[in-house]
Image (cartoon, rainbow, N blue to C red; front, top):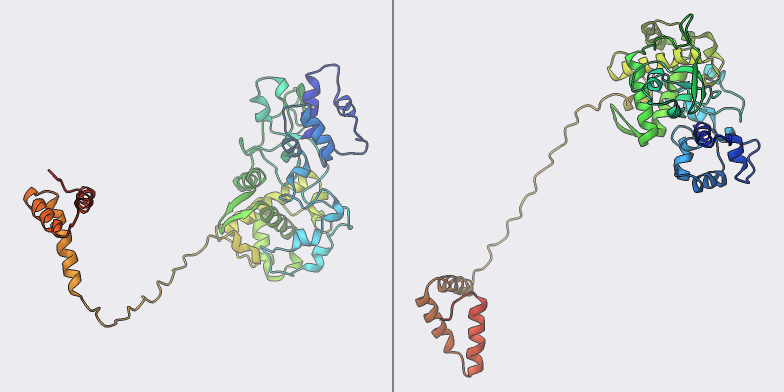
Length: 379
């Protein structure tokens, strides 16, 4: 996060706070959420005063995740129905559309995957740091599409951080200031989180159907999140696979998912829904449940498709070319030249034969040069 970087930078100069650092740029910063969108003049000013480029600083904000994770940091430019319902995976297109509209937030109030930025981190990653000065907060870990650390496969923990100095964990052991043992996550969640991090860092992710752009992956994942949130009574025959998905997670579907968009759920509810979505995606890939959405093909491996060898071309048989006497003469000359290169007697005879056509000394010199070029010795 950009604010985390600013706080750690300011810590290097004990008399300067992050607010003072920004104010010292001489630019208007009031009302600016630096972790959501930082104006270009501020990024350029910070880049000139540091070793980070403006592009690297932008990656520490939500604006650096466009257009992969979200289309824009301006809610007015983010259409809920287009982002969430343009694709379909578990359910046929258009099924339970009336129910889905219940979760549609008012226009201009919604950003995909963006909830209140609450500080989360991996306790094992923090423990691996050499010094407290290295304590930082990653932007991606503050978004609800990630629930685990892709290195240690444990739950991200809520905490309060003074970047570069101290960290206080919300979940601590009774009678201790230390955080409780990390909680492992399901294998499906760890795999989906790995793909999301790959999409954010490389711009694409490998699925069963092939390589897809990061924007397609996050929209596909958000579609599954909405589909598993659909009440079973609204899904008809497809209630059976949805019920199987929730049963395999060991959790009940949070009731509020029926009328509240995922981004506005509590963090524990979001984690439960993400577990169901991850379980559903892996089940579709393993062909364990039937999925009738148009986007399900992106998750399934491509079947073997033999390629037609085609019809071999037919050679048109025309009349045999007429052979001339000159063809035999040319072949004979090539044979004599080849022999003359290795046989002095043949070379002498060939030179004498060719010399009969020479009328001047200049013609003889030209003949000698021709023999040299052919690789025939003249001694």
